[in-house]
Image (cartoon, rainbow, N blue to C red):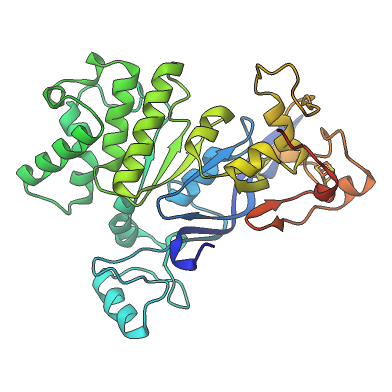
Length: 367
Ligand code: SF4
C-alpha cells in the first residue's frame, strides 16, 4: 500500500494546448492543438514510470510540461519533497511548514503539501530547477562540441549558482562521472572523442550532477545500439538505487520500458488510456490500444496465448481529435457509444487505471 508520503510528483489534469494558425484557401484560421489533454498520475520516490505511445501522442510534451520547459495550459504539477531536516512536507505541522516556507521561499500548495511547480516563475523557478532534470534523446547534438566534458557536466551547477567554489564543483563532477562509469581522464576531452554510449553517460552525469529528485529520460536510449541500450538501462537502474532518484522514462520501445519501469502509462492523442504496474500492464492489459502496442512486439513463441490486434491507419491529428473515445476510429471493438461518449478514467483494480467503456469485458492476458 502506497502512502501519500511516498509520492514525489503529482500531476493533476495537466493540459498543454498550442494555438496554431492554419491556411485554408484565402483564409487563415486559428485553431487549438491539444497536445496533452487532462492527464493525471503520480510518481513515487525512487520509482520509474514509463510513458509509451506512438509518435505524436504527446509523450515529450507531458515530460517537458512537468519540468516547466514549456508552460502547462491547465492543471497542476505538485512536487513533494523532504527538506534538509527530513521534514516530510506532505505531513509537516503548520509550525514546521512556516519554518520551511520562509527558508525556501517557495510556492506551496494549499493544505501544506508540496511545491506548486506549475505556478513557479522567475527566481523561484530558477531556484527550483536543480530539483528536476532531463536526459535528451540524441547524445550527439545535446552536447556542446566546444566545451570539455568537465564543463558540460558542471554546467547545471554553475547555472544554479549554489556552489561557487571551483574545487567543490570539480569534486562533485568527479564524483558523478565515476558513478556514471566515465574515466576521469576523459573530463579534459571534448565530446567528439566519444562513442554514442559514452556520450549518453556524459548526458546522464550532467543531468544528475545537481542531485535532482526527478529526471525525465526522453527517448534516452532510442538512438543507441541494442547492447549499449542495455548498458545505459542498467546504469540508470544502478543510479536510481544509489541516489533514490525518480524517472519518467519516455520511449516507444516497449521492451526497454518493461525493463526499466515500475509502472507504465499509455498515451493516445494527448490522453492517458491505461496506467498500471508494469507486470499488470504487460501481462493483463485492459485497453485495446495497449494490447495493440504489445501485439507489435515480436515474439519467439509461435503458440502465443492471445489474439494480436494489428493497428490500422495513422494516429489521428490532435487538431481534429475524434469525438468520444479517441481510439474509436482504430479500435476493432468500437460500438456506437464509443464515438459519442468519452470514457471515464477509472481505477478498475488497485493501481490499475483505464479509459474504456468495456475494459471489464476484455481478456488480453498473456501467459
Ligand atoms: Fe474501443 Fe470503445 Fe473501449 Fe474506446 S471505449 S477502446 S473505442 S471499446
